[in-house]
Length: 352
Ligand code: KG4
Ligand code: ZN
Image 1 (cartoon, rainbow, N blue to C red):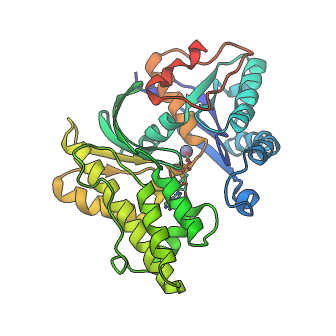
Image 2: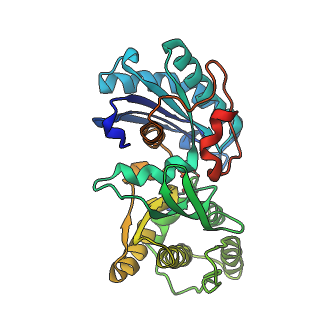
Image 3: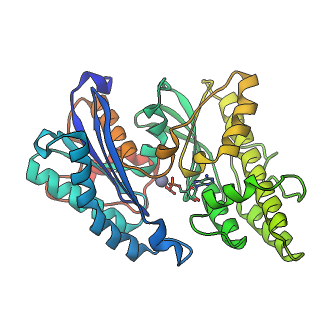
């Protein structure tokens, strides 16, 4: 069943890490409003996310953000048909803020609460674009915690084809950025520095480029940057060149693995999801290589690449549209989160 055939208004809540995201998605009218509060300034001085500070900040901002989002969409709480929240994976305390608010509000409003898998939400976020990619497709999921290639046959039909054996691509960006003395979050900061540099002056490895499988590895790349960095005194121009070369190495590995996954599959569609998918150079390398092979690459709008509430509300809409019933969350009044949670078990929160 297509979600459009139902008429449901869903509140989506994302609090798995360092963004408080809220959105309202209507299965008939599409995205009605979405708001985000970023904790970047809060964590910047520590050089990374401090979990306890993240939870407290979600507590401070979530309810006001929900009220603001309802206001912007001119929707009253009585018009809501379901509340979706990220139930995992992520930081336990941060997840609990979203889960407890979603479950108690849903209980008070006598509507269902749906625990959504964070990676499933990222995976499905490219479907927020027009024209909407159709199932099946290959998804390259590249975030701060994951780098995976999946075949997505439909809701709850996810097959892992390959993944990183160590650091996630976003983690490698963050660690390399830290090494180069850039701020947090590292990905966007490194991309900005790389814009001023030239790839190829330094030569970094392309890990596992020629391995016969679809797995990846990024931790050696970060070490190679460290070795290069320590081998000389680095001017700002040197740092920019090193950043550009690092970005190029990640882009080449991701593009090569992703396109190999498509070639070996039953589809010519690739979708890119997760925060690293916001990187313009990675997008450019993917596009340049995919187009001549007749492979279509879809990206969510930049604002939906990183964590947001829209993808959570949207994943819930698709789940409700697929099962045709407005209930696949935990029991009323109870709530659980799964800080660690395999995507293949994404549909199992109801069993908790
Ligand atoms: O999907 P996301 O917002 O959160 C997770 O679920 O992890 O991804 C965050 C990751 C961080 O590692 C961040 O540095 C990276 O995505 N990222 C980028 C860019 N924007 C965010 N990496 C490279 N280039 C970017 N422009
Ligand atoms: Zn994420």
